[in-house]
Image 1 (cartoon, protein in one colour):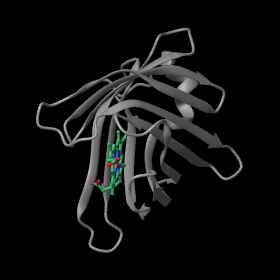
Image 2 (cartoon, rainbow, N blue to C red):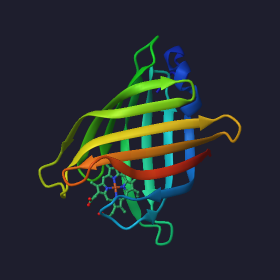
Image 3 (cartoon, rainbow, N blue to C red):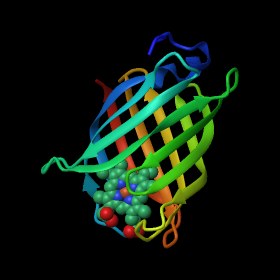
Image 4 (spheres, protein in one colour):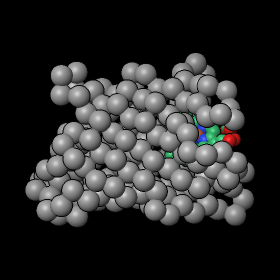
Length: 163
Ligand code: HEM
């Protein structure tokens, strides 16, 4: 790869760029037992007007791998409109859209598709909010989902610091 220059279209997302590690990651949903996990994620700029995205999680005690995501976060140049394309290791692909206003990025699924042999229940909606706190230099993230059985509810509440 040649160009590592930061694309000017990414200016509104500058605060998100880089590698982040969870300092507190909690999971919950009305149908499951609450859990904790460790996560490392990266929004990488390679010079294009988009960020390459990767998230890896593992169990805090056994260190076993858990949920993995990879995709791309795009911005419509000159606007606050963003699109997040994500593929999840459990057989789901989501297209989420939203906007970045100041230090907050909000996303909501526009389409979700899943492989034929994905486990039930089906995910029917995903929302995410990323908030950067300039004082602590940390990012707080809340991911909510709805399924074929359960209405929209928080699934993940995470705080990250820069690696
Ligand atoms: C947008 C991202 C995610 C989606 C759409 C998602 C979806 C789901 C769904 C549909 C369930 C089953 C809920 C039910 O049975 O009612 C579930 C459970 C669970 N999720 Fe997630 N998840 C996501 C991210 C994560 C992450 C990052 C972790 C962290 C490791 C995680 C860990 C778990 C665990 C431990 C369970 C309960 C055990 C199980 O049923 O396998 N999830 N998730």
